[in-house]
Image 1: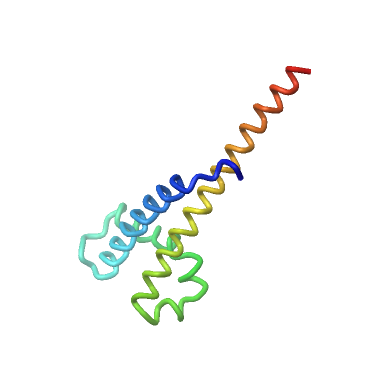
Image 2: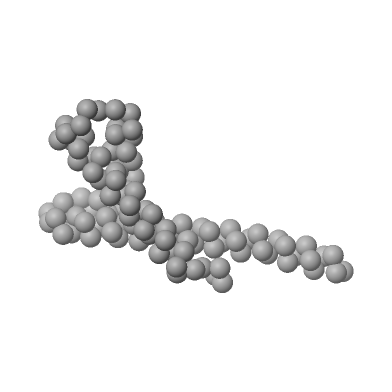
Length: 109
């Protein structure tokens, strides 16, 4: 995968971590009834379950036992999603540039 870029993966991680943090605070504030419920707050709180997916959904007893493990699981999820996004982008770029190179080869023949 020649189009995989670690810096782009790091940027994806930062964006996903910020979204996870926002959704976490929305989830906690809705759970504790801090703000009046509205559509945006409920949507962000519901989206938090997506950011919890692999670790907290599959291994809830392990990650809920300790606060540090809970947040480590969220960071792990962010890293995992960032790598998935970067691999997807790299594969798409590889496919697109592969088509362009194939078209150039066909034109030369």
